[in-house]
Image (cartoon, rainbow, N blue to C red; front, side):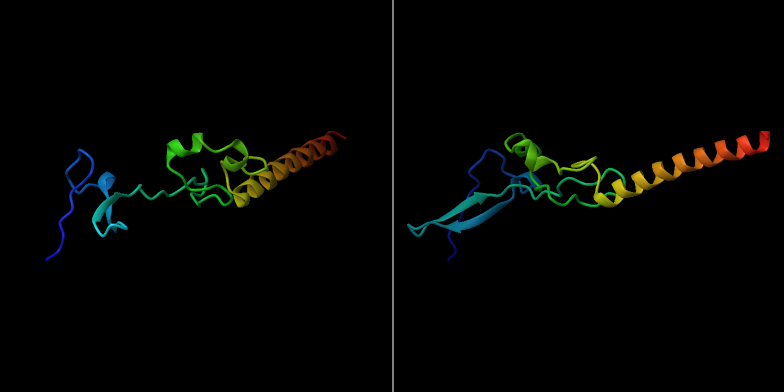
Length: 111
């Protein structure tokens, strides 16, 4: 017959926050191990892809790691992915170029 195990915390329902795994101790007893929730990790604010170079931790765990592990050394590092940053830079550059072209055309039209 299988040995029965019980939860080790007060919550007695099989909910998302109360996931467990049965583990055999060196003494031969079965023990319940409470598992942490799996994380999705930080995502890009524009396209929603997961950010590379930043660990996927529970929200409270980010307070325990230092700042260099939470960000990437780039503009918008830790907030936007590299592809979105590149498109932002190209877009702003093209807008500025367009403004210059408009100004030149306006000056030529005056002459």
